[in-house]
Amino acid sequence: MSLFELTATCAFGIEAIVADELKKLGYEKTSVENGRVNFRGDYSAIIRSNLWLRCSDRVHIKLVEFPASDWDELFDGTKKVSWENFIPANGMMHVVGRSVKSRLHSVPDCQSIVKKAVIEGMKRKYRQERFPEDGPVYKIEISVLNDIATLSLDTSGDGLNRRGYRQQQGEAPLKETLAAALVYLGRWKPERMLADPFCGSGTIPVEAAMMAADIAPGIKRRFSAESWPDIKAELWNTCREECADLRKTVKTEIHASDINGDVLRYAAKNALNAGVEEMIIFQKKPLSEFSSRREYGCIICNPPYGERLSQQREVENLYRDMGRVFGKLETWSQFILTAREDFEKFFGRKATKNRKLYNGKIKTHLYQYFGPLPPRIKSEQPPDSV
Ligand SMILES: C[S@@+](CC[C@H](N)C(=O)[O-])C[C@H]1O[C@@H](n2cnc3c(N)ncnc32)[C@H](O)[C@@H]1O
Image 1 (spheres, rainbow, N blue to C red):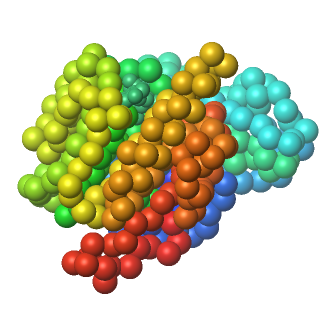
Image 2: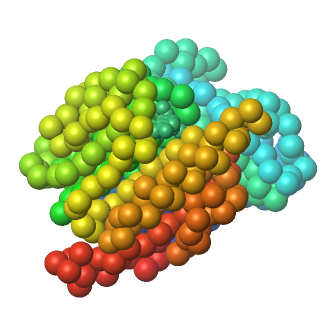
């Protein structure tokens, strides 16, 4: 069985979580770079990581890395790859690229040189001049960083955040992968109540429910590598059966509320699509009406950031209200994601920990207020590394 160098890409700041997710799947990281966790695995690792990783954006097969400070080096290094081991003669080759701090800074030119070199390599191996490109899609990524080129094949296709359940969304929805990372960082366990009083389209509650029930996030979607002839359909079926076997029924107390009734309806529909509608209680209510008698609960939320100047005063008042409302929940852990650097000033308390995370291109902060752990699960140590 062939072993591949694989890379799970992710947003900056959550590499340790992805490495931990991989470890739970049985794959040790071989190295970690900014936004990339490298590991080694066979076809089943490709399938299982695509199906199960909650916080990664994509899974790539890393093909080669070589110095490329001019076009000839890029062309020759690309041509040397045994493309025929990966791409059939009818494969549709789609090249995407990026270049950072490198002499080959024109991304369109990098893409076109790589495509030419791949075709040249394939001509030699397949002994044919023309390639119809009417078969399965192979997305080749050329990434040049500090004059080092890396070529990889994207096995995922659409980003892994696209689980398929979120068909409607409100304003500023969180990426599913980031929502899952927040739940992970919140160290939430199904025994504890979870609340998102700004739930919008329900991404955080839905991701939490899927985690609690061990629902594979990719179970309802397809992946690029699924149409590749080398990875047999039976293997995909076996890995999907594993997902079905591991799914469990679990009692949860997940509360999702929002002031906006329309987005709440989207949230309920999204939960239904994800198969977790019975695990979440949806309520239309403003933050000011949020309260709970439960102990040791967990709040994970991303309130509005107030990007426009006209909204800033309103958002600052909302953060003050949050300070009052959340302040009554003494035994709760609270995790608030916002782009505002001065959040603590309005909230009225300094966070135990503040973690920088990227919500797409927006730099945000996860203000973490750790409450005491419930006596029953005190013995469980959270993963140190994340
Ligand atoms: C940034 S969005 C949350 C997005 C959500 N995490 C998602 O993935 O769709 C903020 C949400 O807070 C809600 N909101 C604003 N003011 C509120 C208030 N006073 N009480 C409750 N919800 C409020 C908005 O309706 C909006 O859905």
